[in-house]
Image 1 (cartoon, rainbow, N blue to C red):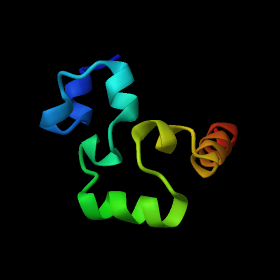
Image 2 (cartoon, helix red, strand yellow; image 1 turned 30 degrees about the vertical axis):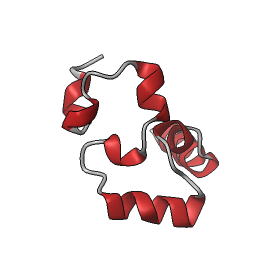
Image 3 (tube, rainbow, N blue to C red; image 1 turned 45 degrees about the horizontal axis):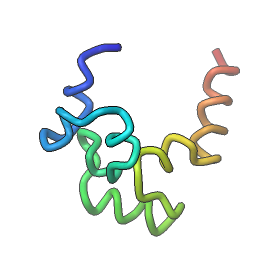
Length: 68
């Protein structure tokens, strides 16, 4: 995988994958605290794991793959 640090907030660059999966979505580069609050409000998403396994995200990914 590419340099993972470029996808993360600086405070999370040294974390292992288990810690990252449990980290708040705001640990992702470009996701602000207000973005994280909106994800929580709209979809109940708190962590990177919850974002990655959200049914709407998975559906969107499937549609995108099939569209290619």
